[in-house]
Structure formats: C-alpha cells, structure tokens
Image (tube, rainbow, N blue to C red):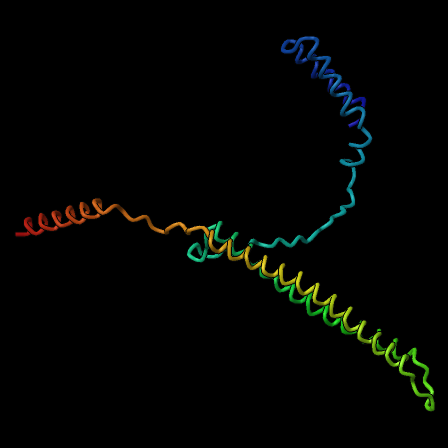
Length: 213
C-alpha cells in the first residue's frame, strides 16, 4: 500500500481505539508508526515488494568430540600424579645435564684441535731448516698450555654438572620419601562392626532354617 493508504488506515485505527487509550498512548502509537513504517517505507517496499537475490553462505565447521575418558580404575590420586610429574621433570633435567656435558666435551675437543693446529702452522715450514732447541721448547710448552687450559675448563664444568646432577637426584629422593599415601578404594569397618555383622547374618540364617522346619 502507499503512504496515503497507510496513514488513512492508521487514522481509522486511532479513532477506533479512542475509548480504550488515552491521548498520550495514542500519540505514542502514532510516533511509533512514523518512526518505523513511514521512515523506512522505501526499504519495506524494496524488500517486500519484489523478489530478492538470495546470497547464501555456507561454512563447514568441524567439531571434534572430546576424547573418551579412561576408566576410573586406571586413574590415580592427584597428589601422586603431581609427584610423578615432578620426578619426570627432574629426570629430564638430569638427562639434559648429561647431554650438555657430552656436547661440551665435543666442543672443547674441537677447540683444542683448532688451537694446536694453529700453533703448529705458525712454525716456518722449510725442509732444510732444523728447529732450534728454544723454538722446540716453546712449541711444546704452548701445546701443553693449550691442553691444560682445555682440560681445566672441562674439569670445572664437569664438577659443576656433577653437583647439579647430585642435587637433582637428592630432590627426587626427597620427593619419593615424602610421597603421599594413596587413598584406599574401599573403607573397611571396625573389628567390632565386622563381628556384629557376622553375628546378625548367622542369626538370620538360623531363623530361616527354623521356619522351613
């Protein structure tokens, strides 16, 4: 319908409801009609008055179901699980310390070979020339110095790594000594309660036999 027809229909409706609504309510209804239908009249005509092109967007969403939980019988106490995690972390740290030691040994070995090769390469290479005693002593002294420095660095690092590994082992030992006691799966009754239960069960059995006789 046109705007004129819509306004006419609104006027008729307002007259019909004059006895049921006061002036304030009728004005509010008129304002609502103006702010919704009249203001967006062309939009309503465009959407409702002709066929619209449908733009459908489909998105495939993959939903992963949660994993099946393990049986409760295979579970463990939380404190025990945390203890095992801490022990595993300490064990991994210990393995890493040993790995670092091997890597350092290899690096120091390569560094020592490189320094020795550089020291020997500085000696003049002349087939007819014989090294003097002082030159030979200096060469041997330099080679020994290189060996001692590399060995000194290696020993210092080995001592530090050994202390670190011993500290990790001590931490694991302390954790195992202070391990929490797992909670029992079943609660057993007191000795007096067990005997009372057996006595009542025996009495029930005797009464049942007496009734059969």
